[in-house]
Length: 117
Image (cartoon, rainbow, N blue to C red; front, side, top):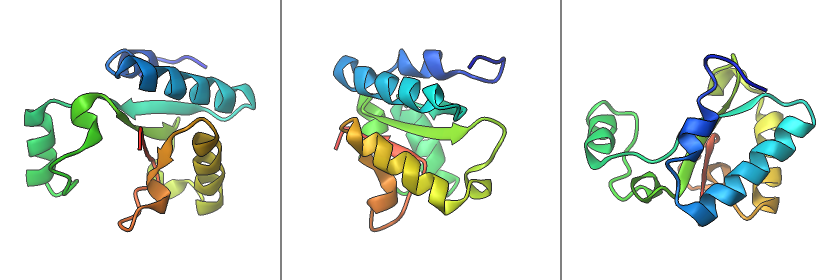
């Protein structure tokens, strides 16, 4: 899957190498069954994270995004809220199969988040 809006490869390049391998394998597997998974966020600078905190989009001050060990994903053309929970559950289970920790199991649920655990 490739499109103008798909920045997956750019986002993958920002990740810590071992984590990047797991996320790339996960992305290939999901896309391999026809699901248009894209990575929408990878490494974040401290300034970007601070901006997200100030804007109320996150409360995480020690995010794994800051070390390149977290990603946020989406299904192309859909917002997180438009994706049915059953789809997120499937995506989460598949991600866990690839050694990713899924934000859907967090106390403060974050359905489209995966990190190195």
